[in-house]
Image (cartoon, rainbow, N blue to C red; front, side, top):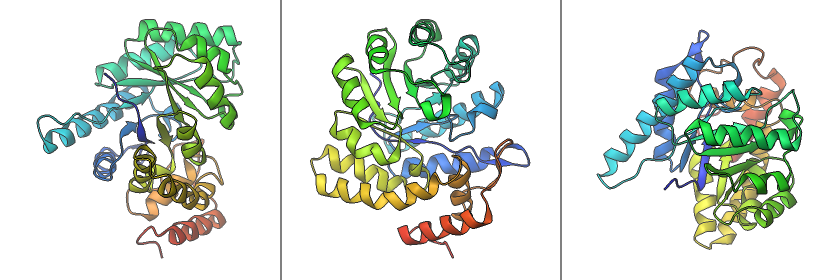
Length: 305
């Protein structure tokens, strides 16, 4: 059974000279696993999935799968690999199905599918889109609601309906409303998994009956994100609270300009990869770079001068 809970990270995709830097990505995924990350989420918003080709998406997902399986094998024959949830969404149902087919061929455990952007479907259109994707795609589906990016908000009623569709197993909820988490918990099937889609809502989402987070800040502080989720699961609320509050300045810095521009800059400063982005995204401003450096130093990220 697919276990989607705890600290899952929306992985950045390293680039070099316009291409995916596969060596840097392998090393980065391995580091994430060693730091305690519970789930790997490549090719989403943070991974610049919108500008990856189908071939690049399949390759990035395959690398994730290979590293996750190898890591589990190194820990023992009975250790299960950490799940890989591949970003597969677009504003075309047909293209989404094609991307899911690629992710499935690469060994992904589930597909993260965002609400279709730009064409702004109705709630019934959203339902039909996700129903078709779940019934024909061949992978478990994690819904992704992020109206600040897509200009369409999937209501709790629609999520409740979709939770009854075979193959739809979870939602990454990033509407910016903690009330929405409670509404989804009320209307959705009991087995349906709710994941925070906003780093500052991790602990509130867990407290409302969510099971974890798909995080941006986990790219740079994966062990601390795992600590927050594990502490809550163990009933150590004070540790979880302290970590959530400690994250706040770091989260503000990571979203001061469009994600993943700031987090990619931060990872370049940490020596994990180059800061290269793919157009239309561009590097952060010099002023913001200084602010991010200050936030990293204040948080205690090593090696930032």
